[in-house]
Length: 182
Image 1 (spheres, one colour):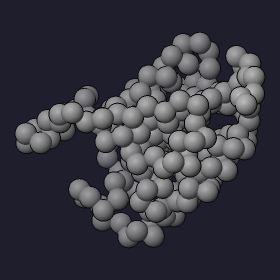
Image 2 (cartoon, helix red, strand yellow):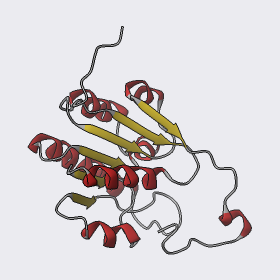
Image 3 (cartoon, helix red, strand yellow):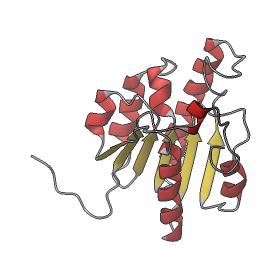
Image 4 (tube, helix red, strand yellow):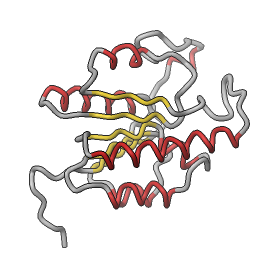
């Protein structure tokens, strides 16, 4: 039996799947929320050493939007030159940051960017993520992005959207585009 919720209650959103657009979808919600006077914090669990366009644009939304880049970059691919243990430490630090940002009560929405991927890669435990979701204040919305969302997280979510890749320019040899991919 579902409990009644008020319009002031937050929700848990998961954007997952192998298609592009998970972080972008969360940023769309952030823009909408800021337009309504809400405060948003995004903690990036994987991204970290590349310069993304959102790093510049989000500065224009401060102080209503806070972005914390906590990751060490993509793990085991592209130009990763970090030991796995460094990624684990960075992910644990990111979890601590999320817990701190939630506890201060300043934010209406907290985005845990690429956290599903971090769980899938084994740099953080799903149980730790579940505790954050289950213990969040009733009025706080959480958005969890990244492919490979596990069933435990999906079962806790109110909204789950799977981005499915149909076609990708990389498969035709087209490199990432500034303003589109980063």
